[in-house]
Image (spheres, rainbow, N blue to C red):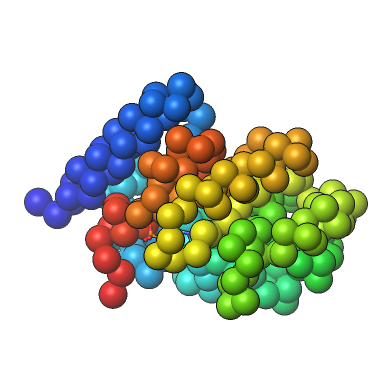
Length: 222
Ligand SMILES: *Cc1c(COP(=O)(O)O)cnc(C)c1O
């Protein structure tokens, strides 16, 4: 019984993404669902892998190192996304394990990632995280610092795929998604990593190319 339990929420989220994309006259296939599996045990992740989900998001390098090598032996086409703040001293571990890095937010991290990519000869696509609500406690670069950080990332050889943001909690997210989309357009970037369980449909209507959904797929985290 438990083995296919997660398939139902997955289908529901996929349908909601398709509906939102169609509403916005976008192709549903242009939106990639990242299943955010932080804190989830392999037993909770496997049912999603079994029904074909391949993009997963993790917050912590160490936790992902513990879980994913074994899962990947069975599902080698898994695409792992790093979505949690990254310390520069973990940059090499992150480049070794992850396929997409969504949290490039400061010059020191750009330097560390550039060095790690050169050393490992692996260049995973990167998103620059923007502190879109200008919140002191949040990760992400200030909007004013974005042009310089993008230039530094490109100079360091990071393949910049787009922008990522987490809007402020408990406010209408649409204006923040729209602002991120505008910043991406201004910088000729097509990737937009935005939208979580509570707001991914809104994000899709505003142009998200990656949505990061945990709770709606796995239930509330412990
Ligand atoms: C945990 C997390 C998510 C998923 O959040 P849910 O509300 O559980 O969907 C998405 N993005 C980031 C950066 C996260 O840390």
